[in-house]
Length: 191
Figure 1 (cartoon, rainbow, N blue to C red):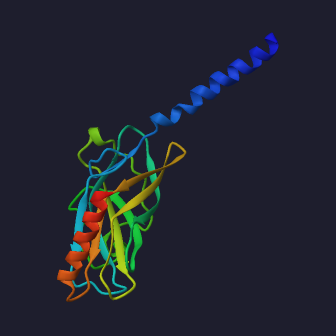
Figure 2 (tube, rainbow, N blue to C red):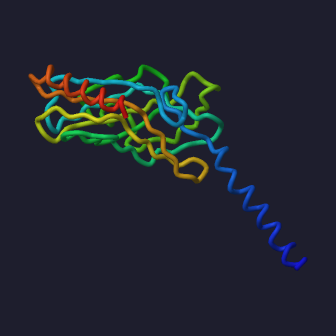
């Protein structure tokens, strides 16, 4: 029995210590948020047409502690109508941030493959800029309530939600587009 205890006890201690290590992995923080849900942001683009890229940027990303995080995917949260996320990228924030443009991200100087985020939020004011390239596949107004960012940090897969409401309004549909947006906003605020 003692031999069994000597064998099992070290395995239990190692397992307990290893299982708690994930709490110290660097977490990705978007736009100064908490690392679990970033603050709300809203973008409405008018007179958008199908199959044209609409690139948006200017959101800071950083880590809550030293390390690195590599973004592996971004998906839309509660998309409606025919909105799609065509691409995402990031770059070190060393100059003016993107804002918005009707061009692909690669034409705007963003790398096709995002570099790892390594900047610690509290150590530098120069963070990493997140940029997203949206489009819609139909003529109607379309939108999404946010994006879910998937990343790898210290070998672990993590996600962070960024509550970025994007609305791509069809030409001549500004009033109805705004009403749809307000209706969706009210409905999501009640959830």
